Length: 427
Image (cartoon, rainbow, N blue to C red; front, side, top):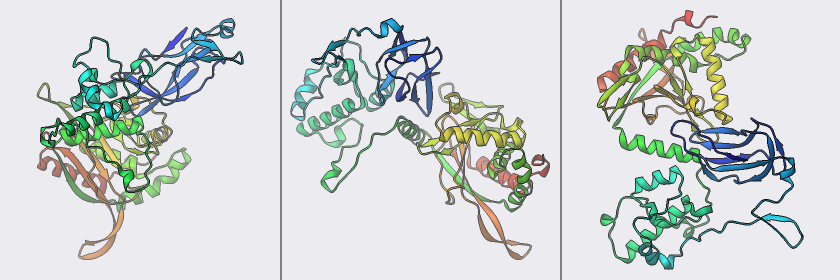
């Protein structure tokens, strides 16, 4: 019985194998995790749909696999002792899998021939993962012209890169100028000629981050509004109630307090909690408040979504913030926990720094960046006194939000932080 990659979720068609948790000859039960697959920003366990003995593992760590691809073949105990159809006896009498021949990538001397031999359109189906298809589409590359070197002629990132380099060499041979070339990848540079270099492949997570940030940067006319909030009183309020939260098994940090203040301000300015439907020419105003919280992890930036922040008591919110942050760092977030946000908060206060310009997390229309609070001299009632000031930066989509709306949002947010009600905090 073949165990194939099931549907991963809406819009998810492929992933990268990050770990294989079984071995050939091992017995597995129905529902047991066979391997872990990285897709977008989540790592998902792939369970076995039946019980049996692993007779063959068809993938290895690092492989990109698509929905429907065979991952593992299961047999019963008797079948597991039989050789598979693709095994051949070696001189020592052992069995070894017959390797699948791969099509070698063309050499640089074949550049012109390769490009002119391959027809513009191919009758054979093109085998390539969604990420490769998307990149080729963005670059205006016809994948029928690209020769795949992976198993079964599948096109990988290295094949696409080789093709782009061949196109650039051919363009040089034909003396094309940069102005006449199609938009695409930047011209590759041989950095090794100046000194030692090290290369490492981009993880699927980093590729996803890069793609989404690029899309947001190019598609959204963004403006950033800066301000500071005096959180001296809010921090003292936190310190007074922190012991009670410790006894309840969680920590009272500034983040849940900030989320409550943000949601209260969003309720006053619903356009900041919206999305733009460009196809329909409509503004989608959301009557729910699902706040994305950017979490810094070793693998990259993760943004789990905390749902219905307006409806949750502060104690429950503290527990959820702590739990989701831990799941993000351990790469145990599900795809659903990364979707559905209406507004995002990026808090760098735990690291340091002041104001910065966060990039909008599409399809949202605004994101709030928080720096580290710092003691600064402030004039109050004619006297200079030290106050704890928090840097705020609101980046917003100027197609939807005007400067006046953004400024009023920031004024109301500062007011909410400086007059936070104590009855919201007490247990």
